Image (cartoon, rainbow, N blue to C red; front, side):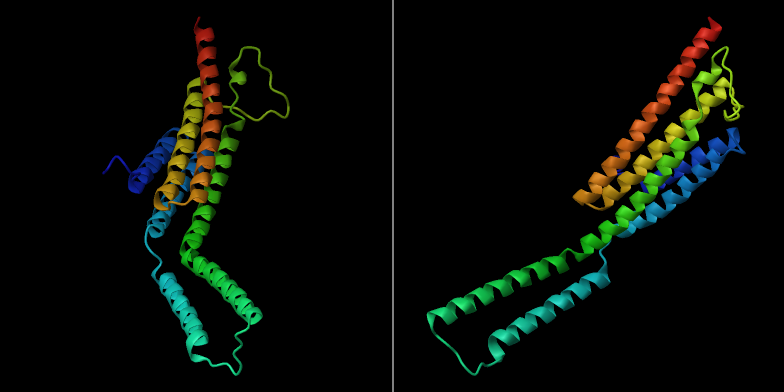
Length: 236
């Protein structure tokens, strides 16, 4: 179903189009370079999430071989090996039962560890990718940090340490809007991991990234609304 799953190719195309739009309006800005990095990330994440959806054949074969070897050892211990002295007393029976239960518990833990090895391996790769996305989100936030609508107010006086601001009112609005769009794309890239890997830890990490991007985008739109109010006051 085309509208029930995220399409990594369309997300990449949207990121590339956004990078082109930023290049046309702000060709020399560092925001354009960040947009280009998002395009590169979308390609990498598309390939990685496609790999996460596939089984890791070599790891599954290794797991099956380890389970088969362990089962063979247990079979040899239980049926082939002979013992010089077999006791039938109650104390020896309890000791043997306790040893058997401990062995079964450790065998179960080992079996579960082997079975979930592929899942944990994929989870680690997904969390590493999500960490990179989180860093990009903070970089986007740094770019909008000094884009303050207060500089558009009449009578605003910059200090010696104030950053240089050359953007007009419409340019500042478009710049902030581009930042908001970039944050939205990073959220969709994060969601690709949750779509490829049905893992609670990965899903929670994706939700954290989406919440981070949404909160920062909300701050940006508050600035855009302030610019609109300043425009209305200027034209009144």
